[in-house]
Length: 230
Image (cartoon, rainbow, N blue to C red; front, side, top):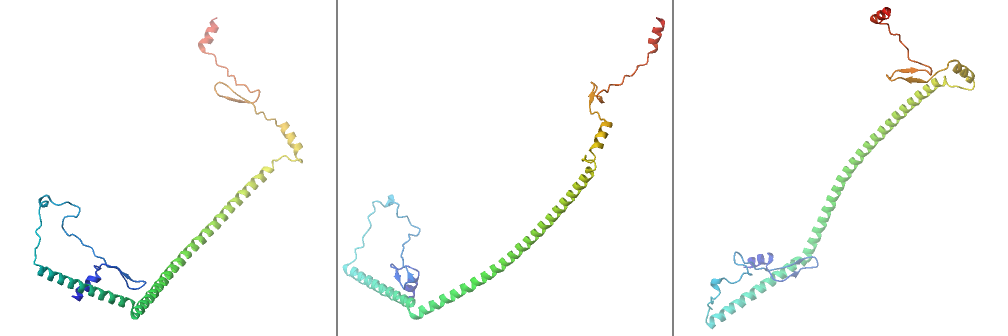
């Protein structure tokens, strides 16, 4: 019977909360469940509306004996419940239990610290690997940028040298204060006419006084004979 009451208490079917200590609080609750029966909110069935339940008219001696047995049962259950409650309080608040709880908490804290250190070591290793990869990628990007800059500077230098070479070649034909007289004489002696004209057929005739060439058509033999007859 004690075992059944212990299971009854441990399963949480007692009616009031009991505080073991400041950190541990055990709540006992009791709840009745109507299993596979009509819900409470439904009305009485029509077939049982006018049914009058038959009362048990037991003799007074039997009722008195049943009440005595029921009171004894309630008293015994109350005593057993109080005994197990006090026992649970002692088990939860005794010095040995407190020391054991403290030891378990310290052990759990040590395990948490050890696990946290392991995680930190793993994260640190991953972070170092990531930083190394980022450094390598950044180093490669810098080298590539340097190579691109060198290539661009080399292309620019070649373009500048080509431009300078062409300008040097063009400078040979520049008119300077030293050769301006010769350039004027050469321009006067070699007059260039940029005028041109276009006829209706689209032929281009260069020069201001350019004219289309006139071609003499040969006389037809019949036309020549007619002229001879006249």
